[in-house]
Length: 581
Ligand SMILES: CCCCC/C=C\C/C=C\C/C=C\CC/C=C/C(=O)SCCNC(=O)CCNC(=O)[C@H](O)C(C)(C)COP(=O)(O)OP(=O)(O)OC[C@H]1O[C@@H](n2cnc3c(N)ncnc32)[C@H](O)[C@@H]1OP(=O)(O)O
Ligand SMILES: Cc1cc2nc3c(=O)[nH]c(=O)nc-3n(C[C@H](O)[C@H](O)[C@H](O)COP(=O)(O)OP(=O)(O)OC[C@H]3O[C@@H](n4cnc5c(N)ncnc54)[C@H](O)[C@@H]3O)c2cc1C
Image (cartoon, rainbow, N blue to C red; front, top):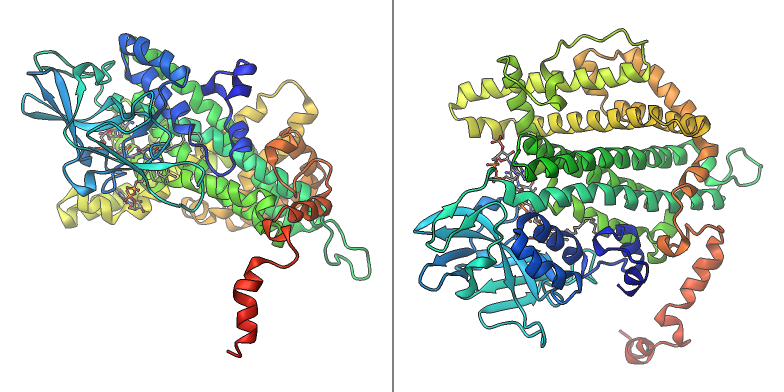
């Protein structure tokens, strides 16, 4: 915090990588500086912002975002915490009526935060208006004691991010002023009447914002992992490539190149998609402030799609990098285990990936049906009902591969929609039919999202003007990315008839050539991510390549090495050795 202040970096602009470098196993302030700050900025009205933002910026108020309950995370409409308006006192009464209504998970809630944005079911004049956000003080701002009516604690050790205090929270008829409801989009007036928002999902805005932030952070986390594994692969020599010859760098093995290079490419694919979603988010935020919510559904769907794909890709990529480092990838000082545990949670939080992909699928099916009826659909899904012929692009060119993605995706949506109709005819119930088709629907969402990511990668690379040589390396990397994802999804391309078996084997051949061509670029590419050693925090990935010396030095720091004979010898081993057991 002191460093950020010294360098005049606003908290919200501190990159996740910098934060990760300081607190590799979780940061108790992350939800304060991200979701809490964003909720105040986007859900509070100007008067409320004047009241709370300066205090939050000075860290007098430290907040969290308390939405998930022990019984409900995904299904936000099913939240049980209530906020009932009392017109007599002009207060809301917050209450946790059941065990399942206990708030559970919020970052920093256990011990750090003294306030929270609480999502609770709003009741006024006897009617429920669904989940709404409230600013709630939880602890005394001076003593930090929890306030009467607030029951708080920490939820216990997790797979990772254990230096964060994820918490639980219950309310016992806890009263807050009416003006603590975040009132930028909807209001409860003094007489208890409810003023509805211009779009009923605006109160979910902080989730959308965070999903976009997660996409960006995933590219950074993956970039750290590929940097470590690639540099290590250039230092590590193992086995014989040619019998009798010296042990080569393990990066010479084609299988090692196949493990690493597609994930280096993935960093760029995620990064370029993140930039594109961020641009859209800024446009939508500007439109909303002018009262226009037309593009909100598109942003919601795109952020769901990119959050799901980037969290899945980066988690798998980091695990592949860990495995690519053999035994040394398993040691904590490699940095890879904490990268994995602090990234795999992004698959679950801020909307579990399957659930988000089903949101995307719902949009695809609705847009496809609208397109068939000649109704207007938004630009990103117009292709679903556009004529599905290949254009005049040269066979197997980048453009042709993008078209193959587009047509295969449209084909899969069409096929799944027909299945949905057939299932509906059998079940006579849309929701049961939907569930029966949901595996296929998730595949539709994944292919559509991959198409978007491939398209963004290609268009961004093609627009690079600064350096022909940089563009040329990135073009090869992009080509590798396209072919790699086509080979992983061969079935879709064969089914749509966009690529033949011969095409696929030609592309596979090219992929192997690209691995060899890109091999000399691997280290320069990851060096270009420009992570300082302190940021990477890895014995395997440091810039100077002194892997073995660093591993040895790090081992000396193990607490077990403080004495030659450990306490456990006297307490357990020696008695065991003498016991004749
Ligand atoms: C330690 C490492 C850190 C790395 C991270 C780095 C950066 C990130 C920065 C900070 C984050 C740090 C830590 C994060 C900590 C985690 C926090 C949390 O997890 S907070 C809790 C998050 N919870 C969720 O995401 C819940 C997921 N569920 C939902 O969002 C909704 O319930 C769901 C599934 C979308 C459904 O909503 P529901 O109200 O039931 O709607 P319907 O399905 O009925 O749909 C109705 C229509 O509304 C549309 N919709 C839904 N959501 C939105 C939205 N947000 N905006 C616009 N529109 C929306 C939906 O598409 C439907 O539209 P149609 O009727 O089809 O037109
Ligand atoms: C590290 C971490 C930090 C977190 N931080 C916060 C925080 O700061 N604030 C906060 O409020 N919350 C936080 N959360 C909670 C998080 O948002 C939820 O865990 C997440 O939204 C998933 O909800 P759930 O746990 O209820 O899973 P569930 O919804 O119960 O999911 C379990 C399974 O059911 C499936 N499923 C659920 N619904 C459907 C459906 N409609 N269709 C098909 N399948 C379905 C899912 O795909 C999944 O396989 C955090 C969670 C973690 C792990």
